[in-house]
Amino acid sequence: MTIVHNMHAVRPVRSTILLFCSVLALLSSGCRPTETGMPAKEELSRRPKTASVSEQGNREPRQRTYYAGGDWAHEKSCRRPPTSLIQILAVPDYFHQKQVCVEGCLIVEFEGTAIYLSSEDANYRMHGNSLWVNFDQNTTALPSSWREIAKQYNGKHVWIKGTFNRDNWGHFNGWPGAIERVSEIKVLRDHSHDPTPVQRYCLSAKRALEKERKPDNAIWYSSCAIKLEPQCAEAYYLRARAYQKKGDIAKAEADIAEAKKLGYTPAKSEQ
Image 1 (cartoon, one colour):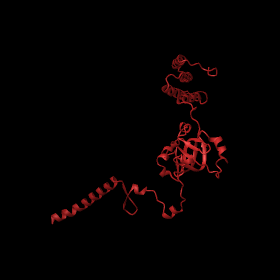
Image 2 (cartoon, helix red, strand yellow):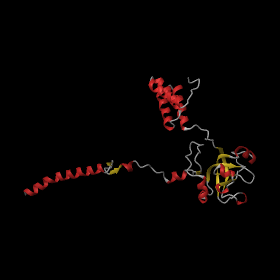
Image 3 (cartoon, one colour):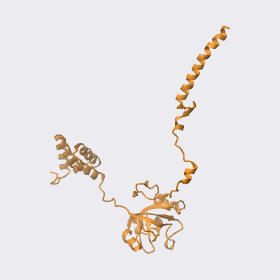
Image 4 (cartoon, one colour):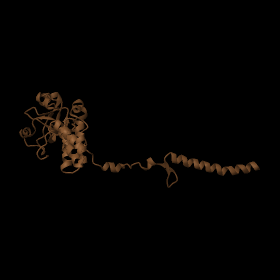
């Protein structure tokens, strides 16, 4: 009789321990109780809702455009080009009858209009590194005649949007494919005359000194220019001016001496 009484006393303690262990297990597994009392994981509660079949059917299909080249940013909504003209030449079956955007050197001439990988390929008429271009005269995005197209775009690096056709080999079947139904063409900007990183740092230092009145920024820009090009006398002179405005005469004199040593002569407006 005593043994049975002790067993009845242990049962409430055992149930309390089991309940405590189950709560710890739920908390460690990342689950939480719901209104129904059943555990649900955080990942399931944050899962995005999928559109129903009726909603998916009402959506208009998008026309995918394959962008070839690496310097195209004419539309803000467009992502960077994932392919190149070389990939179109390598796998023409994949891009067949698909809208593509191609960059290259355009040659517009009678029975030889094509876009080449580079100006060297265009000069030597290396047709294996090019695509035949067939301008659709019905489009309003281009001039009315090919002579006007040649006057505007011949020999220039352009961006062309059209449809690739692997079965169109151009005049006398001399090209590996063609771009047809051209809807848009743009001339690419020449970046060969852009300032170098050192020149950009010096320009930023000048702006920080003269317009923004921030000598600390000018010191940072000129120091970056000196790290890239230790022989840049202009950067030492700009940093000296910034130190002078901050009242650090010792560092200013040291940079002035280094700039004169490198042969820098400031303009009359800077003196």
